[in-house]
Length: 165
Ligand code: RP5
Image (cartoon, rainbow, N blue to C red; front, side, top):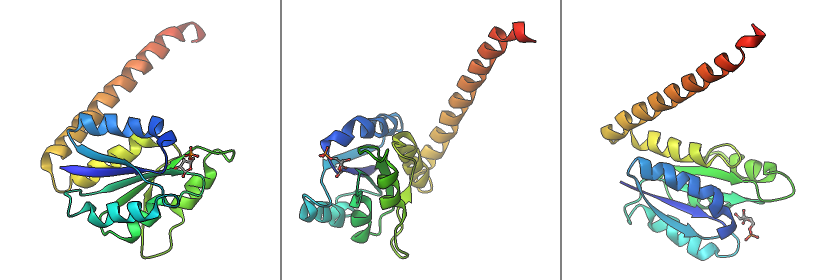
């Protein structure tokens, strides 16, 4: 199974890398590109148009500022597109979030939180798990590990706050 991740600039990579690490945990291979909706629009469109034929089952588009990239990708493919707003400007990423989430009807982009790279990857896994049963089990295991980690943190805080009882 394979997905594509397109980011608008190499300056987005530090955040995008968090998606890659999670996708690796789930054994999902990823084609990664730096393609801007504005600065390399032909190449971005070409990548999205050919994504399905090239074996990709979903796209993540990561961009900041006037973040048109995920919407532009979504306009030329029927693969699901997840938008990852990057905090890369003086507006704290709110510009990116609104640029990505406010798609016109007909061309949806499933938008995660500003810099929410982990959730972009997890949502991708969950979408693919409709088709791949093994991902469903892996996601259940992932959540169980997360649950146990939180409970461990709870135990620690309960212990160090005993004196306030
Ligand atoms: C967007 O502009 C990119 O996605 C990036 O988040 C932002 C800044 O790009 P650079 O000026 O760092 O290349 O297109």
